[in-house]
Amino acid sequence: EAGVVQSPRYKIIEKKQPVAFWCNPISGHNTLYWYLQNLGQGPELLIRYENEEAVDDSQLPKDRFSAERLKGVDSTLKIQPAELGDSAVYLCASSLEGLGTQYFGPGTRLTVL
Amino acid sequence: AQKITQTQPGMFVQEKEAVTLDCTYDTSDQSYGLFWYKQPSSGEMIFLIYQGSYDEQNATEGRYSLNFQKARKSANLVISASQLGDSAMYFCAMREPHHTGTASKLTFGTGTRLQVTL
Image (tube, rainbow over all chains, first blue to last red; front, side):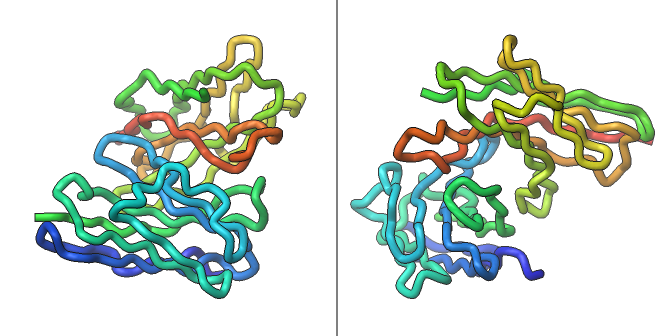
């Protein structure tokens, strides 16, 4: 069974540029999560989807971050404009249902210059 | 608020030996879940083991076992017969209680870097 797929794996951009990350969850998983992992820290939840609905986006900086999961399958996380402090690893995870075990993708390492 | 504490920034263990990675948590709720994940240098978070707060038996999964001491609020990971491939960051995480609106949110500790030596 394929795991969570993320792309790109690495992204280097200049500040003030836009950037987007893509995630395809494990087939059949209706819950999808985006986490932010700063260097030397554990991941922190940005947003959680149940199917197409964002049910927890309280930690998402909405002035520059946006996310969508239009058909309840894959998802895109966008930052516009990117700032130096956004340099981090962005992890996507999915679970069969809201209380199920979360399985993570390989992450996207973002560097903002 | 939920809180996870991992006090060991780094640990060394010899190959084939057992090692314990510490994790303590803080919650006033009775219902919660505890997880351990492994993060190798490739970056992916790999699920290792889960313990529910009402589970009476300590969870085991192959060479991994979870030493769950509810009264002490600790959930230490024990890796037996360490292998070179076990070298990685290890994160303890807690899932918030079922009755909250963010029941599936995981709160992670800062991790422990394990290095397995020959």
